[in-house]
Length: 303
Image 1 (cartoon, rainbow, N blue to C red):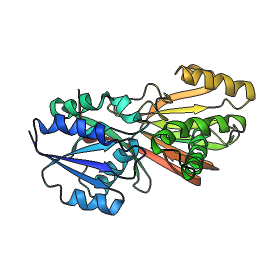
Image 2 (image 1 turned 90 degrees about the vertical axis):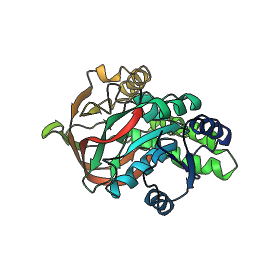
Image 3 (image 1 turned 180 degrees about the horizontal axis):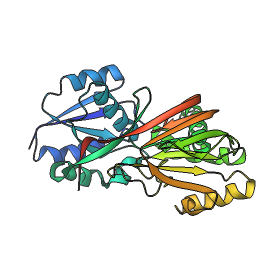
Image 4 (image 1 turned 30 degrees about the vertical axis):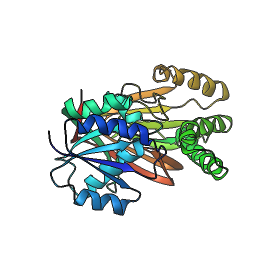
């Protein structure tokens, strides 16, 4: 068994030493293991620089996985990487979508016994990556508001574990009352899906199926099929929004008449302004963004 380098994020939303210790016990039964805790991009880059031939295992959630993959991509070392994942975040959406067990000891066993599987990656026009999902409109606003509430509650002593679990639902509830209806032009593989004359509630580009700890925003997305899924909701009226939310909870929203759902390899969004949420990181306001799929960008140990 190749030696393992387990990378943890000391600033992540969950800090569960007992779960990590349980996973390490499984790994150390069959492999040499070093653990490196990082808290910023500089520390992470230093750890990767010293990784050598060790196989990298990410112990954390979607944000931690994004950080490691982004760093490897910048270093031009991602193509040859074979990553393991110990899902220790609060959402673990990417793990859910690719079949990594959420039970930490089972995930550790998969690191030892899994097979390298080619994984797709989403890359924007400036070279920033998206591992799981990027969305604009109401979904991004929910993430944005949830993040602000997490900061407020954190300042009065609510723990990080609880904050991670309640941040997105709080944002979604607040957004439902006053959603940011946006006007944008969306093109998928060069074809116009929606134009500026038709307001939308939100749009999502999914490499994986779920966001926010299990909300299946792009329910048919597969991070290994060579295409991402694009979902555009035109559910802008009060009743339509409520029905859309109900169908989203059942992962049947993409079957609605006011929802467009398709697959592609490039997507551009222009107009706005609009906010983006990419793997949980929020940025904006934006006027134009483009994303493309990079197939078989790296490998991950999966069933």
